[in-house]
Image (cartoon, rainbow, N blue to C red; front, side, top):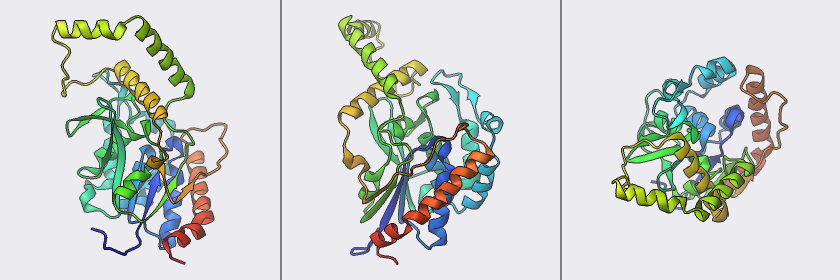
Length: 305
């Protein structure tokens, strides 16, 4: 519990893709300046860095990231036999576990919450209890590309599907000051072209009564009931994800991503913007520079000079 009248602060990290090393540099500077958040919420790649930070392995994680190549990353991917996505990332979870040291959320500080989405009902889920490595893996599960994860009776994918900067969790955790970092600048993980294509498909399905016919046959042959143990297929996952993104666009609330300070780094896109030792060090350095730039504002907000 947070004591009353105590000024606490939280940090919300957006999804970042191959720019995740930015967060290593950013958190490194905060640590050097004695600024430790009381709570961190994160999406996608931000969850990986936050997990290592909470478990005290950020220096080792940094060295591992600096040595990553496309070939090493490909080694974490396995063809998905369940057809819930192109790949499963069990090996990536094993790699994350090296840096979480098998710890649960309850074993670490600061408080943590990793954003996910239940693909079956569109519910936003903040993972803040249990196995930290599995939760970080779930928050990186790009729908359609990686197999969803069944956990706690839910079918979970990347939380960036519905919210990019999970600031709401910080408020729910009782933080009085919130700082967000938005590395994407978009509201969802799909492009506008993909969303428009899905809208067009939904229009024709509605005109041709495809959904009504499918439901009728499902009820007729006993397939209409929800099976919580069934893993949805890849195209089903993609379709549901796009529908959720379309709905989220219509119902978008700034409250979801509201922070007292929102940092939106202006980082030039590299010509070869892929994981490599060179690009990883580049984004790491940008993270350090951004943290130093915003340090006075953060100190002012939390009342620490």
